[in-house]
Length: 448
Image 1 (cartoon, helix red, strand yellow):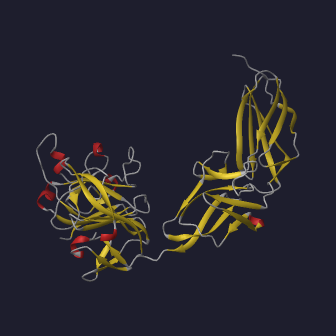
Image 2: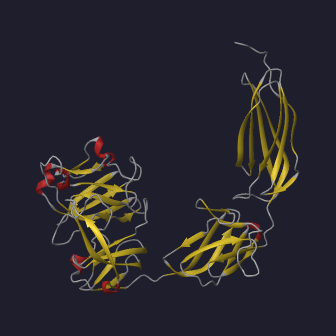
Image 3: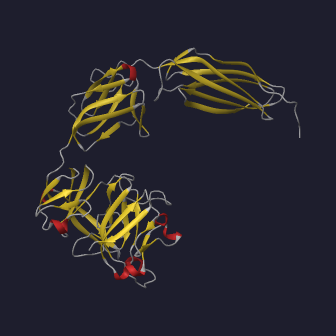
């Protein structure tokens, strides 16, 4: 093994050619390095406002090395005006000794953007610079619906369409960013609004928001006005049938009393977790205010509510076998599927981190070696409407203290399902299942 006398690399030159740039331009980094000991690596890091822009590592064999490379300094979030571009160089020799230097001779300036435009599918709107110090652009008194798709160019053509000779902002991997022609548009949907009345663009933080008047929570629900949709459901015995469901979307308000039309018996036809019956045709909504999808199944005379795209921690979902809606005639309908509300359950968020589902549950013991599991109670809470992956996106029952002797969390191969005990086999009924993810407790209480 060759041993070299101790030494450290030396920068004969370390410069950036450009004294000033505008974000989006490039800088040229030059370095001349030498050492008595053979060189190994040159590490280059570039940052602006503590944001790492680029980092590269270059092999530098021999006792001297010349480096020349261009780097783009992009225009992105958190980029202040007249900010120093920090170029950090670290030269390392074969024995691991290093020499570091920092070049801060280049100033980056924000591009001058006096006006932005919002180009939607059918119209264009000027976004005025209403807060120059914070780079805020806005437009008010708009008349859009509650679902808009648009681009944000710095220039428009004579026909008020996107002028691609200027910068254009769109959707880049779910974030606001600069796009080229053919890039993705920005989409904003807020079904809780009557319509979008104002749009605000923050070009420092790179965010765009839309506001408007909130919908008034529904006070009347007539299931006869819902649209028809054919949905196939599979039961726990793997039998699949199709039904004509009636569906709609509505803005529902917490503690708002609603008058119902078309449901024969509200006490037996509404999801107990989400409604408190207050009269022959009225019930108070218990869920959090928001837009919900409503499912009414005429053959069951029952109404479900859910928010299909809601995820943990806002909500939890429940799926498995051994349960069904808490309404007569009692029946198990769940089936480890996600096709219709017969097969799974949407949990109500009682308070932050606490979730509740009320169900008819029946744990049957069947000795069939192939299909006996279909009769059991075996289910799990999920973070989303759909499966998790290797424990991600699902709740592990083994991490919870279970208050009831009717449930337990068995072996590892179940990945933490809540499973019925032998005692549960003689105690079918309507149960309220409350999961507290803060205290890590699971309460399973029979209410009927």
